[in-house]
Length: 83
Image (cartoon, rainbow, N blue to C red):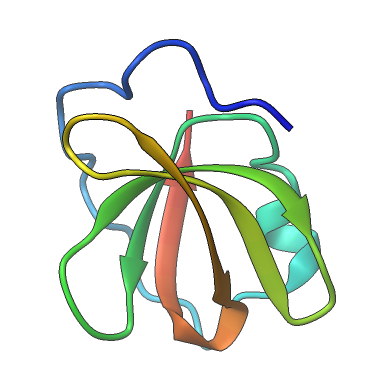
């Protein structure tokens, strides 16, 4: 798995209505695409998913300077959108 070679877009997308739950099928459409995630707690962030499991997603999270490998439980995602 290789991190993206370019930074994510410089804008923060408009948050859509929150979902009741994020399921693997919905976020799998964002694999290998710039994805903005609004977590249940904390600020939103750009993410580049490379794997979606039954209860989690992993990929690269933008820290403002470079991509870092990261993962999170799908229950911790309030909503997301991908480009």
